[in-house]
Length: 207
Image (cartoon, rainbow, N blue to C red; front, side, top):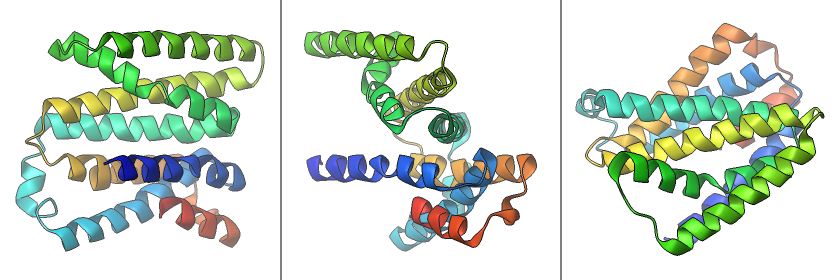
């Protein structure tokens, strides 16, 4: 479990590099991220079996759709945040997601967080407030607020997954969320106009 968390952190840390390196607009990035990542995730789920079966889609229900929509909306904010503020700002703000999830879980499911969690959450909140206040009046403020919205949405997605463990959530936050991104990106941009270097960067991002 610890190794998976560390690997996840390393993978997430590359997002800013790819997003900053791509010249395409936010919606084109979202389209290709949804398309390529969605295909890769479906291939993985098909290989693993279970969640790719048609019956799994029927078991999503509103919790699955809610988790997918929260995840896809968070991804929109995530990519847009990188385009509008520093990579470090996005990463630091997103680091508060576990504490936001603890707060949502307390309100929704009455899961009481430990005292240490509350203290850590308070310190993180102070840090975010200091950073956002430092961006006031600058172009970074929009990106910081998008990163904050992304963090809350990701926290909500985590709690939905926790609340409904019997639903095929890998399917929801994987392929279903990617389909939503493809639809948004296609409707808001001209994704096939991206340059070849951008396309290869986007492929690496999706991997």
